[in-house]
Image (cartoon, rainbow, N blue to C red):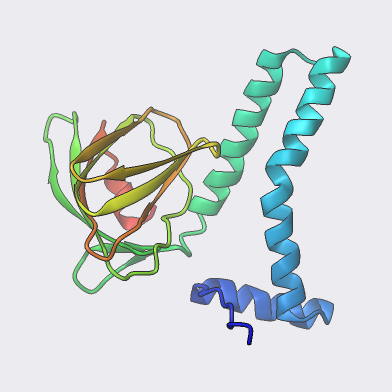
Amino acid sequence: MVADKHLVLDEDVHRKLKQRKKETGLTVREIGNSVLRSVLWRHSLSDLIGKRLVDSGAISVEEYTRIREEAVREATTKLYNTKAAIKVSKRGTIVTGSWEVREISCSSDGLYQVLEGWARDGRGRPMPPHSHAGDEYFIVLKGRIRATVEERETEVVKAPGCLRVPAGAVHSVAPLTRDTRLITVLSPPEPAYLVGE
């Protein structure tokens, strides 16, 4: 007997899948598999195209790297700006993926902002990919996190551990255990980040 395999999707994703099903006549399974395959193969294809462009002399490695970074930032900025994946709870915290986050402190001199984050469920869903104008530091107090930085680097950090994400780097972080708690320091602060603006 084969075990059932299911993905748990957020409500906004379900709505989009249903809408696409009506538009195309395809099943949700066909649409989902197509989307996942395209995402999973995207790195291989973009890297192959980049290698061919560089090998042919059409562009330099530096130009390809710059263009790719700009494209990733543009794509993730559009995703982040949808606000669909970030909600403000009745308690004034933000909820994103499997995280719940609240501000602990924001310095009056504009140097830093301190946030506390904890796993709100055991599903291990990441926050949406995004970047900040300044550096971000994750200090894992309990449990473990998985961090993906610039689409390529995936790192698991367990308590007590720390991870620095440099300014401008597109990143996403997921709690890997139900008891995960962390402190995040942003420098300079981004108060709008807490309300998903």
